[in-house]
Amino acid sequence: MSGFNALSKPLKPRSEVAVHTIHPTLEEKPRAKYSVPDWFNHNYAISYDAERSRNVSHQVRQDGRRLTNETYNESWWNKHDNDVRISDRLDEIDKWRKTLEYTIQDIDREIQAIQTAKEQCERYLAHMRSPLDVALENHVTRDGRKAIDNVDDEPERELKKVCYSIGYTNMRFFAQTINQLDSFNIMHC
Image 1 (cartoon, rainbow, N blue to C red):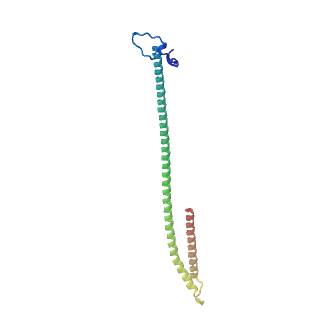
Image 2: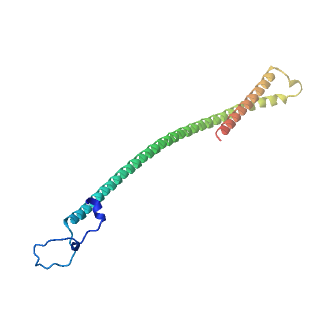
Image 3: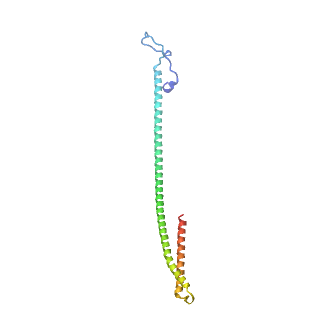
């Protein structure tokens, strides 16, 4: 019997084992004494258990290191992927922000141009109002003539044409301006 199987049986005390003493005169204390093979088997079992414990401990440490490395690598790559996605998203948001800023500036320029055109149209209408007023005043003055002085001649026909022409131009210009401003307001509201 040797090895671990020997441990499954209890050790025999010395009283059951014949031991020869060198000095029979020495008093022996009553205690259990074991044989050398029992001692060897016992120490072998302790050594075997210690070796097995060391192997298990080593395996647990290696598994722990492997798991730590796997966890670290997985978390590092997850963080890296998230950082890349966040960076891409920030770049996309920045691109859209710049596009919106440019669009806003472009709309502001268009609004300013339309305001300038509107003011210019109003000035043109005001300037065109003066010739119309003069032509209408001349027409009223000519219509105020009596009897023989009320003549239908070429200047009167020209005066009527001028009045209609200026009035029609003003109305058309005013209608186009209103339509343009309405379409702009509808487009940007």
